[in-house]
Each structure stands twice: as structure tokens, then as C-alpha cells.
Image (cartoon, rainbow, N blue to C red):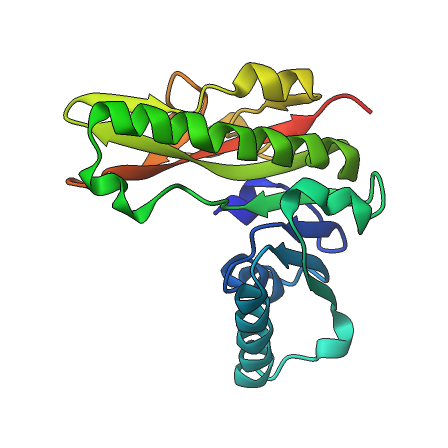
Length: 212
């Protein structure tokens, strides 16, 4: 779904800078996207991604020569040291969503967790601004923390705006109004997925780079 929200052609260059075990990269391959980059801070994640892609190509008997895939270890805060400026058409990613212990946090602890995560996301977008082409997109998940009936979001949208990105509507401009996505859009122009009892939910937002 997140890949589809990027609305990119099959020959466009995709980046997942928090690739983990390579789930998004595998989906890109299965959807026929040919120019794929994956990075992660953890060497173990890079090995898992490579192993999973090897399995995927073998399992589905895909011609690997048709794909240009680059996977390497890198801290998202220093992506521009290894990738060229204005070289990425779309970033689709799920960054670190917070401590697995957050389920047991108090409301005060959740506020601290939000304040701790915010700099990582802002630093990531600082690098995204260097790498993403004008009119390129970032489809990303933000964590949403819930305590009783309170929700705690990352309040960094204005900082991201100042870095040259604008949140986009969840509408494919190639489709007419009769084909609008039947999704519940939040007042933050995002989509939130959560299940009863969950403390950490996923907020999906699509940003477009509007400044060079």
C-alpha cells in the first residue's frame, strides 16, 4: 500500500533507509520496480535483507539481471555521504517506532519517548531533502502512542515543512473522483493503523518535496 501511495513509474529509483529484513524491498521487486536501494544501521539487518532477497528471486524464479539493487550499511543521518544529491524519486520506509517496552509506559514516559524519537525523524528528513528529487515523495510511518484515551504524535510536521516537504492527499491524481481511496483520513492528513489494546500504532503520511 505504501509503495502504491508513491505513484512512481517502474523505472524510478526507490530507497528504504530503514530496510530491516527487507520487506519493502521485496515488495518493490514483486511489483516490478527495478531500481532499488536499501540501507540500515544494523549489519544484521543488511544480512537479513540480502538473504531474503536471494530467497525471493529463487522462489519466484525472477531474472535478477533486470534489477539494479544496492544494499549497504549506513546511518540515516549520513545518507548523503554515500548517495548522490537529487538521485532518489521515492522513499518508502518504516523507521524505528520506539521502545518495545512502551506498552507499559505511563503517559509521562510516552511523552519522553516521543521527544526522544523526534530528532531521529527530523535528521532523516534533513538527509531526505538532499537526496530526493524535486516533486519526489516520501511515504513514511510515524509512531502514535496511546495511553487510555490520550494519543501522542510526533509533532514535527512544521520542521519537515521547513525542510522542503509538504504532506499530500491520499488520492491518486491519475484516477477520477469515482475511484477515491476508501480510507479514513485523520485531521493530520494521515492514515492510522491500530488494533484494540495496542500502545504503538502506525501513522502513514505521504510527503512531497516541493523545494530544490
